[in-house]
Image (cartoon, rainbow, N blue to C red; front, side, top):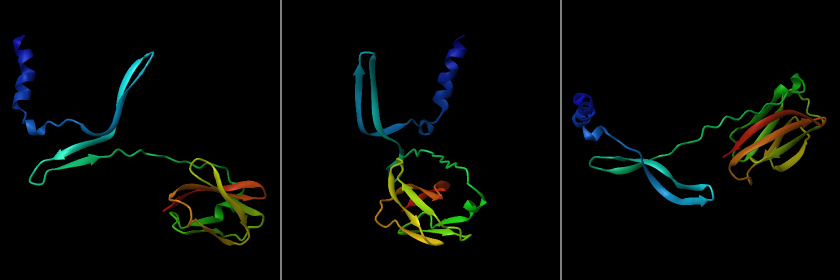
Length: 159
């Protein structure tokens, strides 16, 4: 019985202490929220670790969210597949190119990441140019509309 109790202590005493690491955090804010049902403490911060050596420094470990975005709309017909938008990511100007020359009665709607309509207009040429230079860096959604039907939706990244 005593051997079963002493075994974990022996294993831990043989392990080098330098290999044991624990999470630490660089806290930027925190409070205790209380209510009628109880209380909860929280901390806002980043996980960090210390790199030991001649030049010791604290390194931050940032966790990034993984986002999957699906823009699923049915194309009205096969003509919609020949629309090109470039460059993406865009810096100043975005080009909309109807490869099949069927651009008549076409327009666009540009939406921000919250779904708010920012800009709309007509597409009067086979190759049109949209000015993004005054827009802030973000993710935008652009809908191409023809004959009052949404024919294609694109996700645009503004640098």
